[in-house]
Image (cartoon, rainbow, N blue to C red; front, side, top):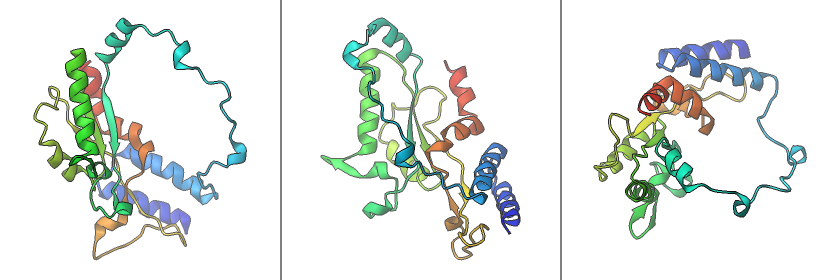
Amino acid sequence: MSAEGLTAAQEKMRAGGVHPVAVDVFSHYYRQLETGATGLLLESDLQPLTDPPRLADVDLDATSGQTALAFTVVIKLNGGLGTSMGMARAKSLLEVRDGLSFLDLIASQVLRTRERHGVRLPLVFMNSFRTRDDTLQALQAYADLSVGELPLNFVQNREPKIRSDDLTPVEWPTDPGLEWCPPGHGDLYTALSASGLLTQLIAAG
């Protein structure tokens, strides 16, 4: 049944306009799921980092840092909903201080860094299909946030939810949007490439 489940999931993703690279990535992890892989790391398999480098021991060159900052982009992972906190919107829209949200603080920090160091420092959010609209609406309060032709966001891929009993795609006819979920933060590199944003960023320097 799992082979049929993978085929059904792949067809669903293609019909939903999901990028072929994202379909391949999903298929890779689906096959791991078939073999019983959980994706969990056991504590017994982890080795502690006993002697990490310390900031005080690092020779920092301010000029080199300034040069690097001129070629830096800030990408914020913003695909999660705040459902556990009673929100149906992006977690970043949660008010945290003096009427400001995490999103407000992020935007303000980037704008302040640009002013202080005289750099472009683009800010781009990786949204999910569930967080994009609310996030972009909130960012309208920051007219100076965009940099050139670069977008303020790109949308990560989506993949079908899978039944635990037979590994076939979930069906929810009354609300088809609930049949999908974002792949998580690990989708960053796939989404950067598939969206064309990586090419844009490189071209923009």
